[in-house]
Image (tube, rainbow, N blue to C red):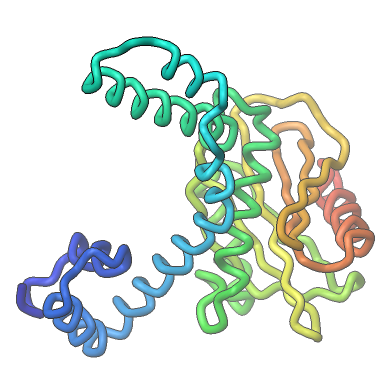
Length: 254
């Protein structure tokens, strides 16, 4: 590997810690000369950390005792028994991870809320690049997100709740693109409002809440839009902000 031949696969291997010392040094020299790529690599690392924080507890669940007992109770040939044990392990991990990773088997609002929480944790930690388009270009931001979601997107005014718009970005979602709007208070607390659009009107829901590691998400469905407001502030305060968002974004309140 030379610095001139370094590609995306080498960068991913670097982030995943799969390079030897010499290759790692070459990649680091390349990143020192390419600050834009270095920032991208840092985002990948932050994403990996957020994924581990969210899913490691599930992936490390022990194999159910009934499965291991069933395997021990049978006189399988050693090689076959080992293969079945690995298969059982894979099936078990798949079973426990399934509700998080497969939207077809999860209530859509809950799956959406998990996506919103993960993106919130990932991007609110960014100091220099928390958003893709800043609030100074709000008109462009709203038009761009509306075009990508194929539906009108609005950025609610949360100044009365103590938050100013920082900007936003486009996110990938399991059921289609998502819009993320980020807000910040004068004391540095950050909230994100994640928006999805469905092709058909969905059954409306009231506010539901999800909490993990100090982060709360209030999420709800309103006609053909889904909203998820994420933050690490007091839950009562966050609910008040969610209610303000809901009032402003109700159809007819343009």
